[in-house]
Amino acid sequence: AQSVTQLGSHVSVSEGALVLLRCNYSSSVPPYLFWYVQYPNQGLQLLLKYTTGATLVKGINGFEAEFKKSETSFHLTKPSAHMSDAAEYFCAVSDQNQGGKLIFGQGTELSVKP
Amino acid sequence: DAGVTQSPTHLIKTRGQQVTLRCSPKSGHDTVSWYQQALGQGPQFIFQYYEEEERQRGNFPDRFSGHQFPNYSSELNVNALLLGDSALYLCASSFYSGNSAYEQYFGPGTRLTVT
Image (cartoon, rainbow over all chains, first blue to last red):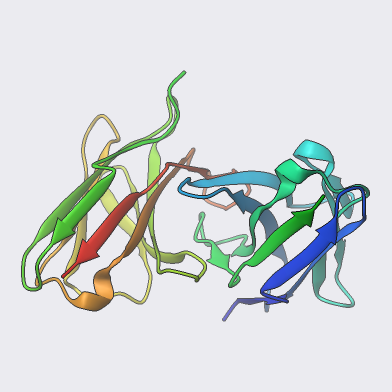
């Protein structure tokens, strides 16, 4: 069975500081990996995804993530945090053969201090 | 181009009642998935519909059922509501390809409160 673990339910950074949100996954088959962002009282918006090919993927709003198979990780980073980045972030995994079933982590709430 | 839309936005029901939630997918999408997001938790997969059939199902009881219409819109029905069914219900649409490479677009959700 697939699973996702997000380390840290809450992360706080200062504006302009590096953002690092951690995600580890478990999958018996090559996974597809996703990061979604959720703003208060809204649905989920896709930030980026890894399917095949280049292991460093770039997403919207300056975010990027690196797929490390040996570490079963897919951490999300952004060089410089902005106040508007404050939100809930979810890492998700999907089996290539599952046709779209996403398994989500518990989420990490990102706070950005001025 | 309208994205994924859901109705109603909020709903309050009493234990034991039944509820129907609705979802219209993004234009060009033919697959609808439903997720339940309890407060402070990540979304959990309920089921997925494609070609008006349930293609996959998560670990949810039979009280949760769904339907997909020829225009690809979908309904989620929950019978015999329990307090624990209180959650944000998210609909996501995608283009079916047999694998999950295609991204899912999420709607804003329906907030269900069971009292």
